[in-house]
Length: 297
Image (cartoon, rainbow, N blue to C red):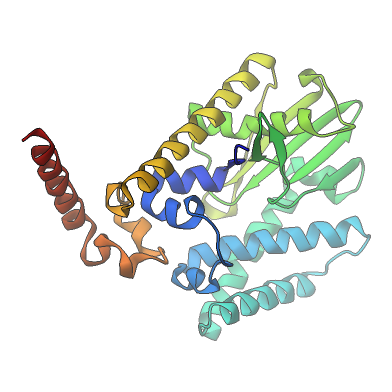
């Protein structure tokens, strides 16, 4: 039986940033649960994003159940989630850093809730549901994680809304990744089989807690391109995995594209780049040349 492969935005982003880190996280067989210590290298910005996403999920759940947050309760939720995260990482969080995180996340969320695309959710003036990022569909024998954060229904139209706590890179690949929400919608039971009934929206965080919205047409041609992108990504990941299995070595894997990727890597201490990414890449090239010379002669 062919083993299912998984595709998600976070999966392919890590693959493009550092194939070695991707293989250690997603590519090798899972024989035991992932060690929670891996998150202890997160920067404060990374922590803020994770806290904000958890706060958003809690807010949506309470709002759906008719429980509305005061400003004080909102700040306390951010504090509680931040404390829980730092405790899980077995790290200390000073009061100064705590206040910085609370103010930062609170500003993000307030601006998000005031955005016009969020108004119908805030006022409950239309039907809506929210989904965790672990929500998936099966497509062509593979597991695809491309669910919207919020799904709204109004006048026969399903609006897939993704909330992105980073800037949206408005290029072809990012657009197709966003449009993949349409694939998710068409594969969901009891929704729609007509792509014209689907609207794709993305809200991305900019500077100064400003949110920028971008909307895409959902058409058969562009959905086909999104599916082709997913198939291409899965093929590239499959090839990398097979290469490591065939050679029984991690040395064949390309290293990180940029030193900043190494800063939060949980595997840095056992990586050739532990003493410097540039030096490790140079050494990797020399070893590759040596192997080619050996094969030639």
